[in-house]
Length: 144
Image (cartoon, rainbow, N blue to C red; front, side, top):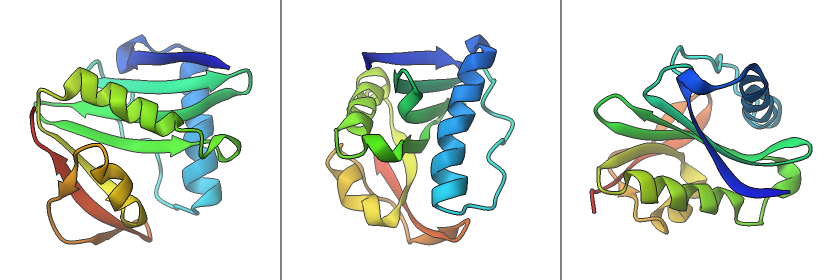
């Protein structure tokens, strides 16, 4: 397993990176969680988008995406089913805090993960809402 975090901006992704990112996001969000909304949103290949992941010989084990269009928005956090419980997403969250923690960061957490995100300094910033059939909680982490 690769223990180093891959951090790549959207404009620097290789075709293999794009395929691998699509593969983990599709497995978690479309296959496991039955999200019917399309994943591609036109933002993955932008130079202001950063993709972060850990990988093994089967591809990404955990992944997240950071959008920075003047505001920092963290999303698409997912971990491959066979790699859950190993703290991999936590490593990515810590790295995103290291890189962007001097700025306010927002995210829309799946509501059952609200306490997990609180452990990284995030707090609820509004009412729960439905996104693609899954309850989400808006959260914010103030600039440190």
